[in-house]
Structures are given as structure tokens and as C-alpha cells.
Length: 330
Image (cartoon, rainbow, N blue to C red):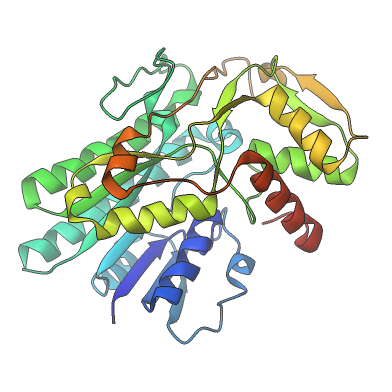
């Protein structure tokens, strides 16, 4: 029986991944400090005989060693979450993104040196591209960050360090590791509490409140369903040819944030209104945003025949149905 460790396994993406790993037949170890995750996300499997859940932080070396030493595969998803948290707590953002990744990779490197066969997925983000002006981003593009006086960029820079570390461990220690850059993953169980735009819009529409669009709403994003993304992660880890590489994971169908609000309005509650808020009011005066964020998915399509099955209307309906039945996620 394969043993898989999922850090942040009580979170949005992590909980969906845990369910699929259990369905695959794995013994699954979950560690989460519940700072942004919610144990209720695992309600469907919490009593599963092959699930072992630890409430703890992967900033503790003893916790990392105990769990990593049992794993055949490590899915490292735990990280600082959401633009709102990043803007308010940049120190925590940097520390929570870099230090635990180094602890995990160090221990995996020791295991490989001792002869163990182990694989690792490192979750990264489209934020690493920073302000690159290209209309679509591919994995070999330059990373273009703003000034260090803008706390906005601390998240992308810290996740870029995670990527450098992962690829260095592959190069120097032959660790089987793959990096996935997530682009606006959405779906059931995602909370709007940390600034995630789609659940924030749907929650407002269901409650009959105005949907708040930041700035002019012409920022462009692509939204992928968590089921498509989770399936891609598992396929990447299973593929020998993907080791030591970086992959964009998401959708490449762009939509402006204002049009997204209008789409939610039409599908969830035509009577709700749309209002605008400046970035300085939403975050702080130094906040900078990325106007366009669209991935080139050529590499992942070639590697695993990636073909997302959910379109945007499907995604909005799934999020709305989930929130109607359970209320806002934690």
C-alpha cells in the first residue's frame, strides 16, 4: 500500500486531493495547523481507516521528520493563502512559504541519499510570474517582480524560492520532485475569507449583497475547477518524465473580473448589484495588482494530455450549489 502525505490536507485543494488518494487505495497522512484550513472539509472521509490526521505545523522539524519518513509521496500544499493575508502579514507569508518547504526537501533529500524511492509535488502559484507583460505565460518566462517596498510581491518571491529549492534538490540529490503553478483554482469548499474572488462573489449574491469588484474590474483571470487541477497533480506525480520540471496548472480561458461578476449575477442572483472598491480601500495604498494572468498550457497538455472538463458556468454552479447546501466554507 502506498503512503501519501498531504500538507495542508484540510484546506480547499488539499481536502479534494486527500479524497482521491484514499479512493486510489493509499494510506493518507494529513497535517494541517487549521490556520486557513477547516477540518470540516474532510467530513466525508474523516473516519476512513486509511486516513491519519495530525493537527500541527510543518514549521516543526520533529513533525516533518515523523511524517515525511513514512511517505512514498509528499504533496506539499500548505502555504500562506490569499491576497488579503499577504497584504496584512508579509512576514508570516515569507516564513510559512519558505521554511517548511526547506524542512520537507531536506528530509526527502536525506531519504533519497539513504536509498529510498520517494516523490514530491511542490505547489507553487501564478504569482511567481509577477508583472511579466506577456499576454500568456509559459514556464520558461522571466519572473518580473515589483519593488520590495510593495508587500504584494512577497508571496510570489517566496514561492519562487520554493521552486528554486525543489529544482536544486532534483539536480543535486536526484529527488523526484515536480512543481505545479496554480492559476486561480476554484470550486466547492473554497472560502472567500482570504480574498478569493469567485466564492466572495457567490457568497454575496446568495446573501443578496452587492458584489464588490476591485479597481475597474478589467483585470483578466482564468478559473479552473479543483477536480481538474487535483487530477492533474496526481498525474504529474505519477509521470517519470515530469520530474524536475515546472508546470502551469489551470484554465487558459480568460475573463475579466467585471464580466465574472456579471456572470455570477446572471446565474446566481440577477437582483444583486455590483459595486466598485479601490485597492487602497481594500488592502493598502501600496498594493499593486497584475492586470492579466493567463497561462500557456502547452507543456502540461503534452506531458499528461491535460484537458479540463469544467467550463466557467459549471464552476459557478458548483460553487453556488455547495454554498447553498453548506454555507460559506471555512
